[in-house]
Length: 232
Ligand SMILES: [Zn+2]
Image (cartoon, rainbow, N blue to C red; front, side, top):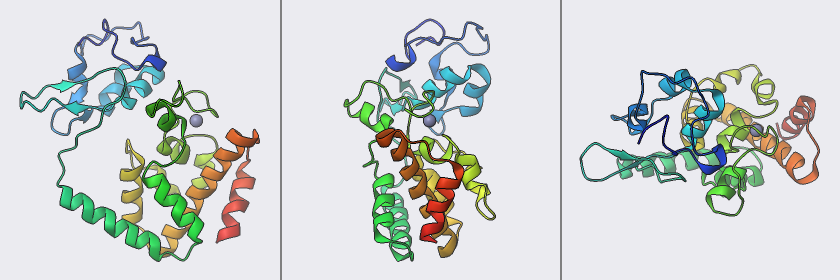
């Protein structure tokens, strides 16, 4: 599949690459994939494409062809990323994470909401699009990027200011392409008290998102910060 000629982007992104500045260093879609990890080469994609095209590419999940040929398939629409990870290790990580979550001294409704965030039981535009419930995955607030869980919690609106608190601003540094991996990375490195602060912040960011999407009210940084303070 050829990067500049074929239609391989999701339909909401227009199908074809919009960037007219053809970069000769890459030609095939496969050139954009790191074959060791079966993931997009984020650094290369960010360098070669404009912001809109790069965001659309990063939304496409990759699936292994399964024939040991080392080829990967990219189709319009979304595929399950078949990570070659040890299922026992994944299960152990999950159970350790949930154990830490349930042990936190925060309201139960916030723990349950976090469990829903982790399991994608949340009506983000991206989830609704993938379940064919809505026609677009684009975020209703910024109207620019797909609204994934990670987008709501680490990119959209006043998130940078909200996280910019003593001991918390580092959480936006790790680069992950899904919420679970980012969350696990953060929680593994924090004590129970900081975990609680992080989870209450996540819940307040989701609350602010719903205020806008459901009631049309845009929450300020102060609104979100006072919501966080209510539960500390
Ligand atoms: Zn947004």
